[in-house]
Image 1: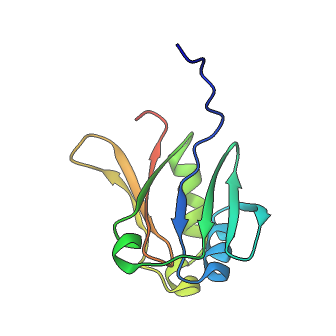
Image 2: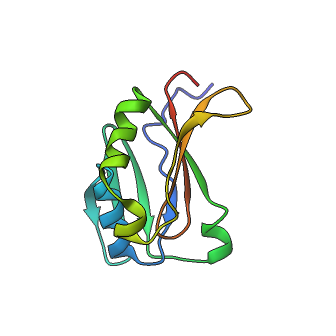
Image 3: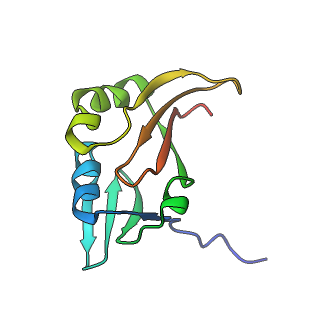
Length: 123
């Protein structure tokens, strides 16, 4: 048996405009911890992802991530404090609501069309 060695799992998230996407995620509380010409590592708490300067519309618009947060209402207040649609030209976020599968989830679309499912930790 191989010992548990996984330290992180970081998806490569596509960006149509890397600079715009970095500003978008900064508005949601992510910080850039590493940056190169074609990518940036963004982090919030102990979790991170790699934002890459790569865009294929069909991929980006079918790319989804789930983010579990300790307090969904408190985290969503950050989303409401920024007019993401006006500021970044994205689809308006959809506030947390009970979903048919029995969990309360909010939805955020990033500038490339990536869909984030934001849910409380009890999922």
